Amino acid sequence: MTAVTATATTQDAPDARPGSRRSWAWLGILPFLVFSGLFLLLPISFLVIGSFVDRSGSLTLQNYADLSRPDIVLAFRTTIEVSLVSALAGTFVGFLMAYAVILAGLPKWLRAPLVTFAGVASNFAGVPLALAFIFTLGQLGLVTLFLRDTFGIYLYQQGFSLYTQVGLELVYVYFQLPLMILIIAPAIDGLKRDWREAAENLGASPRQYWRYVALPILMPSLMGAAILLFGNAFGAQATAYQLTGGTIPILAVKIGAQISGDVLRNVGLGYAMAMGMVVVMGVAIGCYIVLQRKAERWSR
Amino acid sequence: MSEQAAARSAQRRRGSAIWWVVLLVGVAYFTVPLVATLQFSLRTKVPFAAYTNVLQDPVFWSRLGYSAMCAVCTIVLSVALVVPTAYWVRLKVPRLRPVVEFITLLPFVIPPVVLVFGLIRVYSGNPIPLVATELGSTALLVAAYVVLSLPYMYRAVDTGLRSIDSQSLTEAAQSLGAGWPTIILRVILPNVRGAVLSGAFLTFAIVMGEFTIANFLFRPAFGPYLSLLGNSKTYEPAAVSLISFGLTWVAMAMIAIVGRQSRGRVSAVGVR
Image 1 (cartoon, rainbow over the protein chains, first blue to last red):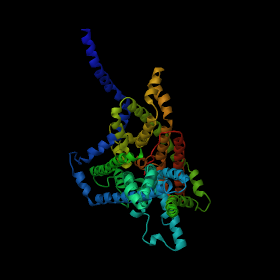
Image 2: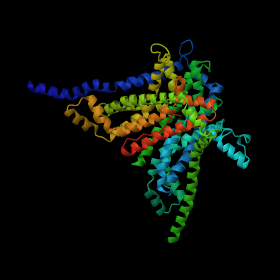
Image 3: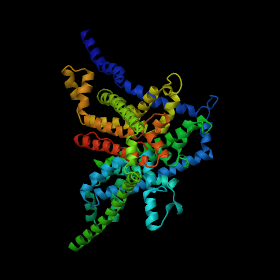
Image 4: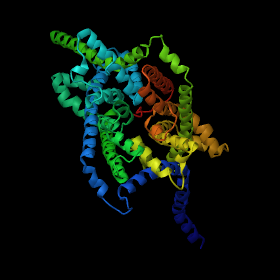
């Protein structure tokens, strides 16, 4: 009889313990769950649900069908173009700059100040950044006046304007480039000198080394970085708002206008636009995470 | 062989000249807008008038103070929320790690303008009309900033926790009779101080420069103040932009200082 009870308890014990823990331990993160529920998940759910409801309150897909309105298609296209151009420019130049101070043989001490500055510059965005570029390349900007007075070239008569899509892309690169330097530096650190020496000893030219060794290793990092930069620009609102005030159809600025007043004449359409932004961002960040995991293989 | 080596080093030298050019062009692109802003702020007839005007303007100080107050509240709340959660996930409920990580990643996916859109829609009506009052709007602003800080704060604290043996520390503290509040406040927190501080300074930089959310909640914050100033004054915005840049610089310098002493690091992605 005792033997039976003993086996019964030993069989029960391993099950019962984690079982009783499982039911209470999660309570430790309840404050976090409540907070993120109230101020993150609830607002987003509100937008998700709202995007499937029409003005009379019944379920509809019309809001998503309305995303094909020409002005909204244009906003998506412009935002994607600006994000893509600034991301590619930032990826390319940022990579070259990081490579220059890490592996290209420039003095080692250059790295620390460049990385520190990149940390500051990647956070110097929004309103003050837009203003700084107005002081640089606006009609009365330092560079504009310098070119006019020294070389007789007045940019604004040559067809250039800061308040255009090209101007906006130029401004966005200011926070893209340093972010690229910050995220690609560890990947460049991961390029081991041995690999280059091994390639050279096997008779590889620099071109072959890059084509068959360095770029394949760096590719996941580079692509991941480019995608992160894309998302970084895609969600930006303040810079574009301050610089152009809405003359360039940027999605975030358009949604902002919708918050202030019903400019789309349809709240549900505003929700659908917001969802469109979230989907694009979600795909971008998802790709970034996958590529980052791939890239980590080499950093061990 | 030596010929080949000489050729190679000559090639390297030519190569490094190109890299210098790349670096200098990049650095010029970084610095010219700052120099232009400085030069613009000094174009006033009376020397330094832009700065003296701004520094004597009580509105400037009240907006700066408001944002600083929001930053401090955000940091305290964020730390109070993230440190126990990250610790608890690591120690007791590793099963829930994917859930917590997913939630802390969401603010990267949801642009601030979309977040504030949702917040306004939810909290402008019943049952919790936060937007209707000053205090409620400020509380909502701080809550939104805490949400923005989650990705950095969580990742920094989690990295910090990885480098300490929280299991042993907890058991040691418990065997000495410590309760949970004591363990978190006096054992865990001091051990991840570096990570918490770098997360805090990054949050400070983000909150001080934030525009979008504060603007749509009609808050008297620093970002909207600078934006309005940019549309109404000529030289003062340049001065305030530089001050804003200086604030970011100080916050990043603090991160670099605490980062040198600790293992927890933050990735820097600000608010555009």
